[in-house]
Length: 217
Ligand code: CDP
Image (cartoon, rainbow, N blue to C red):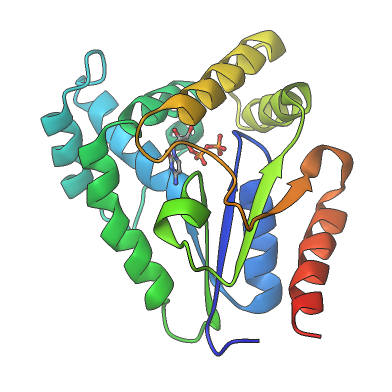
């Protein structure tokens, strides 16, 4: 095992990549960065200034500057479906992606003190942000399963939504993320694929832990 471990977790919307990344972070004492929260925070900044209808690159870049990446808002609105959709819009602006790269790479290179490395989850971590990560995982599951999970998550937070609307939104966002010109969502060639639809949370984490352990045998 290297002195400082760097792990990339990518995947489709609501695929469980955050749950996997947090589980591995805890098991391996790694600092965790939810990179989706960066894009969501930029989106929320635009929504709050009412600049989200026709997003201009300069407004989005100004919103990037206004966020404090180590202190992102812990706000239910951050995870709302409206913010998700605007985040995907913001994420296709090259200047926004470019402005967020150094922060993510710095976090991975210099994780906060006391950690044994860093784990980042997102869409382009294994391909663009950390192409030489020690381990890469790509999470996916059938869209109906992912929509059900997101539906339950939103309901538990008091949001109202229908399962069908969420399914449509998730599929639209995946399509958006996979087909954009800059840093599209795709699995890195050396990523380990995890079908999270057929595994419990514990089994998903155990499977990834097994992959990490067997690389060190
Ligand atoms: O949690 P969920 O999978 O629904 O989304 P997220 O990871 O919070 O990401 C929200 C949106 O931000 C995605 O749909 C992408 O458009 C964008 N994103 C990105 O482009 N690159 C990343 N590294 C992370 C998120």
